[in-house]
Image (cartoon, rainbow, N blue to C red; front, top):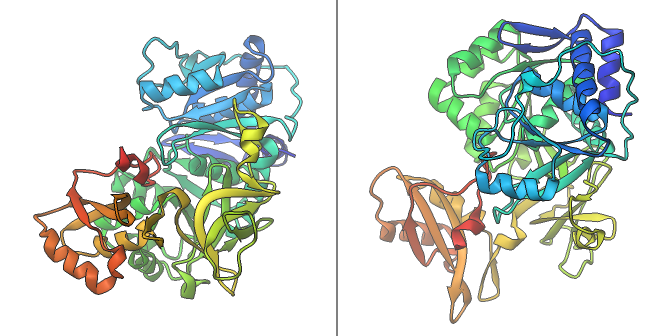
Length: 477
């Protein structure tokens, strides 16, 4: 069974049900399947099974048709952001070796890009078989902490397993009307697309969270019951519209949050405004989508954890030598389940196997599981700072820094020290003049001495991925 199987099933069982809304355009499930077949017919005439197609992933209905149409024709999709820079595009092209580049890519240089509208729109009478669940469906190129992209190969089975896990935890149904304002080229946005359509729900496509008027307008017009967002989006909504989202408390059934750290006070504010909404936050990677979940209201006493394993998923913590850690003991967070990716495109199996302890995928995240089964992430393993043998989580220091008046956000890394091996350095984005001597005094009152940054640097911005994840290791360059 694949997502494509399920969409076809909805087109047969509920042909007039609305699948997609984009502005004034509404597409039924029958219409969606018809358009998918048209795209599949075009791809099958010019490509062979297993060929890759880059889709510059703007949030357009045409992208949805092309994405599932390429799958149905046997192609492997490589979704990328329309703003992808030339260097990153070159790296992706070298690894994926695509047959086509389709969409609205801005920085394509000499690369030929086929607009969505040029893919044949003729009716198709061709009959397509559904994809093999063990075949590769997508290559998702991560940005990662180092900035070097690698192609995560996800099979149809991986994608189906992830959708089942997510829908089970959140409780999605065919009655849901979801607003999609996430980048569709990333794991989170694509996951929401597959989750909604696999259940036969309705997806309302919104460009972004930039316009609060459009956001709340579509919430009301389409009777939206849920949406996904990253923590930065919630901070923006709160800043631009205050408590207005509380007006939809009886309408919003669920929200899924992910991709970055979220301050405790922001979680509590959202809970206050939406007391009966199922507010879910996930933990995961492109390689292992949504491996853990927390429900804010249900798990209100454990809000600083990332929750417990998702349905059909196992999580364990291992020491660096690959032996299991005791409850409460820090180690590398590892996951197991059918949602874990099948490999890295262009790399041999031996390289991929290094990311496993047996059957357990090594996330590269450092943390522990408490006696109640809640998973706590401390930091990325490579970002842990070793000060004279004592481990420092940059997140712990950043939380204190970010609470200081005048510091908008911060990032901490380890830098060389002749005596201690490493010492902490803090990079701060400031909204006004800040006296770092005073900052240091505040930190000393709230942190152990070895965790207090030895030096500070004021910066205009911090390096982040397109989905908002902080790239601390780039600050070491």
